View 1 (cartoon, rainbow, N blue to C red):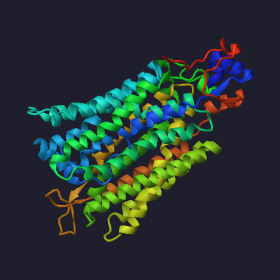
View 2 (view 1 turned 120 degrees about the vertical axis):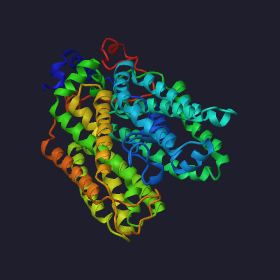
View 3 (view 1 turned 90 degrees about the vertical axis):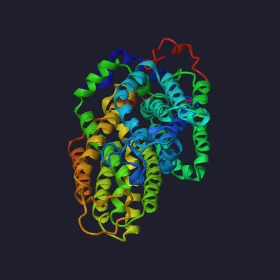
View 4 (view 1 turned 45 degrees about the vertical axis):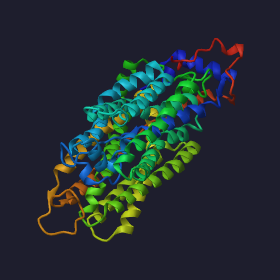
Length: 508
């Protein structure tokens, strides 16, 4: 595939003109945009990181062991207190499970629509729509607590969760788009990291906050009302503080050419891009593996006598060290631009940690080792997520960032379902007495083969990426050729000499 500047003469001419005129500029309000998207992501969802250590009894429903591959702070407000929610609203275990499974059901088909909205309608309207859906969903699911005599609270709860699920795809695809349009090249990975890691931070807060808020069933309205606040604040900020989808003057040559292709043309280029397909399949598989690990963590550990509290502690380490790793790697990549090297090394180290978990999780009394392994899994695995999104944009440029990042997540969702179904189908019941602390009322499951398979899949995806993934940094090449001067300014560009230079990324 030829370089983008050669394929798009008009874009190259605009880039050259801006370079000569020194027309690249950053705006302080980009941080407000990042705050809105981060707050929205915090309150809504990320498909790759379900609640680690969720009790097995609250997970099983229509399919044994099948759990959502995408959860949110709004959804997770139910998870730690699922038994009280069920008693308060007179719901069955299957109905409680559907309050989470709806995220998976809705997010995969709506992902393609979200890609089109981001790249065709614009980042501002996509963010505002996502904030509105997220806030509306949080309000709708609270109606059973506010309206006396509600006939079927499950319908309202499921309806509210469905609205939040629709918002999810608009939210999780946005950080890569925002970083490309508003941030200079030396800040893009950091901006992407902040927007992406806001979600697992919200998951961690929900795990800690819900049990504190809900001591008895009478406290459930307080919990639901509390989770309306961040969703409402995100909607208010999105409506009042976001003025445009793109800055008046682009921050880089790459931003000047962003979304210079139509939606269908971009999708066609992605299907022909070997490097992108390899990255999407391998990292999408990584998303699926992490989803399965997070959802099945408690079920795997309880078989060998580990408590649900310890599983929750491992999940907290998993998220906390993951955020720390993402911060460190994001800063490093912004400074060095070693995207491919960081991605490959991170996945290889993650594979080693998964192999260690597959072995140690089958042993008893290894609390320190398991806690350390889960911390390393988060540190290495979480940290490569923002880097992978940047790589997806680099190897597919000038395809829109929404399509480049969005398809990876959609594929990861689909792979997550397949992997989780495969893992749970390979479990067998223990015949001999055990030290199990599982609370599902049945005999403990043997997870030895599924865990070894999960580690093997992680090693396979890592090897494929290391051996087969090679790509030039197309966006960085364009920016290096342009060598623009970047100015920090809060004001729109006013130079008359720039008025005639087209900004091809401009969208509604």
